[in-house]
Length: 116
Image 1 (spheres, rainbow, N blue to C red):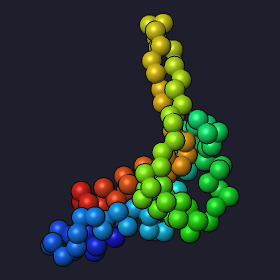
Image 2 (cartoon, rainbow, N blue to C red):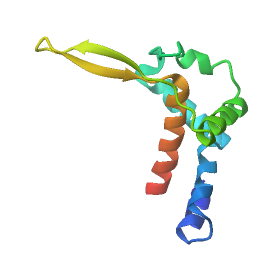
Image 3 (cartoon, one colour):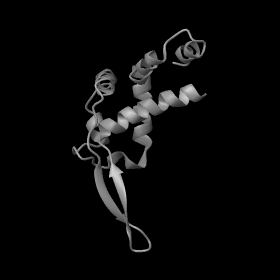
Image 4 (cartoon, rainbow, N blue to C red):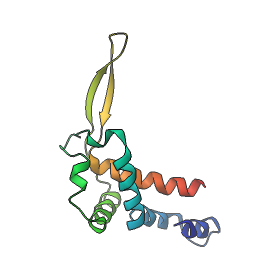
């Protein structure tokens, strides 16, 4: 992945080709590990999914799902809940579906590589 980004920096490849890095199997596997470590992995999204939903799929299948959602710009609605603050007021909190969390994490990992 880093080699591909170096090629981009040297103007050898087009920026639009970087999206392939998002759904590479190694990137998806790393994103899955990172999501597994997050505190909110069991939060249930609007569609009723959480991290346990992802455990049924292979890395290859998840890579294809990320690719499809990224290319076709598929997103789910965000579940809105309100949490009580210390002063008695409530603040909004949005909970994404696990599919959106996975795509977001894959994109984030590519951006971290690009920043380095």
